[in-house]
Image (cartoon, rainbow, N blue to C red):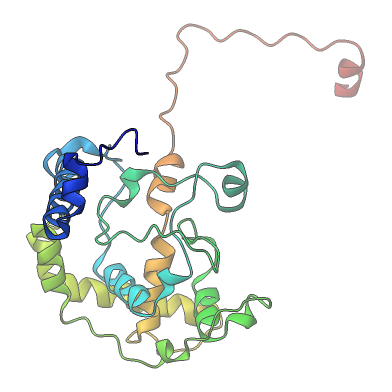
Length: 258
């Protein structure tokens, strides 16, 4: 190393001035960070958008906040990587365009439990209710702690319009109507989920509990792109002219027809 750094060179002198050296290193890091960060903010098409991806509904947004509050993202990632073993276990790998409306994103890198980005629609609503109440009732080998208070704690929705307004200013395409009707829309979706849970044999009276918001959020994960992939393809145009006649059966087929 001595052959590359002169004993009395500029680098040696900078090392002898710790405060100056620290300031210069900090400036270098800030410049490098801005060079990486600013294009993602200033260029709208830096991430390819997916037509079928939509912002979270008000109730799903409330459920996402509960998911973060309870620390679920500490044990579950939300990024299916493009490796064969992950594709076979979880499904299609996660696209950048699927998370354009997530603030903050919850990709994660630690999996004490399985990845959850494709969990939406995998289980019925009641499964999620039972799993949060007692994880071992649905997954006997689970080490996840129970969250029974989610079935008891009242769901607070009054701050939803303010949350949607802030996200709108950050670029999430919520309309003025959606913001004004956020609480009513959330309560309507909560009643629908609670009714399905009860119909599936679960407890009644969950429409105003936090568990329905969390279920709404979990059931949404990874379904936007799945909706696009399963959309019906346009029907092929009918062939013009007379249809070709089928060949007449012969041999065993003719005998069977007789």
